[in-house]
Length: 309
Image (tube, rainbow, N blue to C red):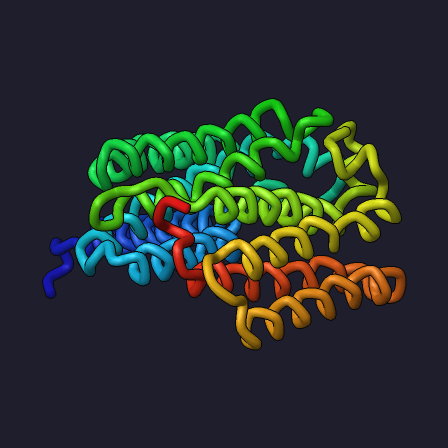
């Protein structure tokens, strides 16, 4: 190198390296943000209930003879409906959840914004409409009625004395939906519809029971909140037992030992919940879920449940 030559200038190289590092950092941050939002949406949709309802409805329609394609379509319709309801619930309750310091809620935890959850709710609802109607006009309208009842609960009825009504309507619509897609599309048995509606009332009581005190503190005054925890624990077994009784004696022909045994199992669950509720706050909810599971099996196996009777 001669004295007149300038040393190599690596400024351009350093600038390029910094630009590449900044781009990589932004990409990593954006990816992390997307994963955080996805995790928040997954938690905000109430994944447990959404999955349980979807699977149970899929089993019922499959057993009722909808066929593989019909069962898959029904499952998609139910799933999108459940997603829309769960996201609507968390978006509407965001302010109350923050006031009650419910950090387990993804919006309160900062995983996702209420605006994003609200947009997801409407997107799922938009998908639910054509999927439901593709199941057939009667089945589609019935399912959309159930979804509308759930949205009415989230938006308005949750804080009223009629908070039980959307649950009764939504659950009561299940046999109508299942029967509409069976060969012939005949109406379901009346006792199946009434039993499902009673299960809806029980589900409402069981779902709200663990959070009654927090709900009251944030101004939610639905039916269970007006009753109070002690009365809800006592009342909860009654609709479960009534629904089980209908599913045992409603179907034509003799009940048989298996149905009576199932009723005894529901009675045990119904009694255990209130007895253990004071020591284990979640016990009534767990007992109600167990009893409801037995009732769903009774409904699925009941002869004539999805035919006129």
